[in-house]
Length: 218
Image (tube, rainbow, N blue to C red):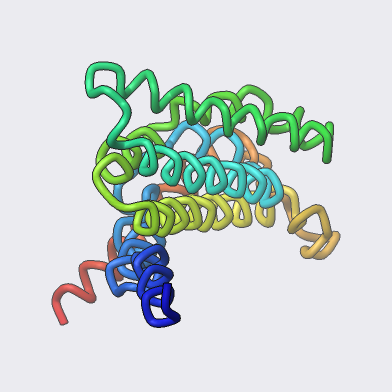
């Protein structure tokens, strides 16, 4: 095989990562179609584990890994998975990566694993991951599916981190476990409770949609 032919082969294998479509897939999940602020998906972990920035960051990273890897594998196997059992197959693939994440977090930090609790296992049935598997990864190339998974995962992590940071700073006076508010600051305990999650999410949705409407009018 000549050098020119080899370059063409390499370009074909990696082309979907460098195309404009791949970049658009990534940015769409990160901002324009953010799974939390736009699609309002994944509300269970978004509200339940976002009482601190660290918990939100860990859940976001775990979801991003599972989403990206499951998208890649489902895209690779899309022509081999029978349509009749595709959902069960997707769940099996997702559950494999969730188990890897679960054991990894448990090995790294037992306290963090206890804080996230059952919500790590519930990543298996996260509607964001299942929807991207069915609507995108099963119909597109590996490169585009990877970019889509990374974009949606990082968009989800960004949303969780915003919610968790606000709740932790106002509710505990700390950020990532470090004190950032003065001792005289009166902590809003309600912000680390479930009601604080709903309140913070509502405020962020209001701000996000305000800027989105303002941009659409210009």
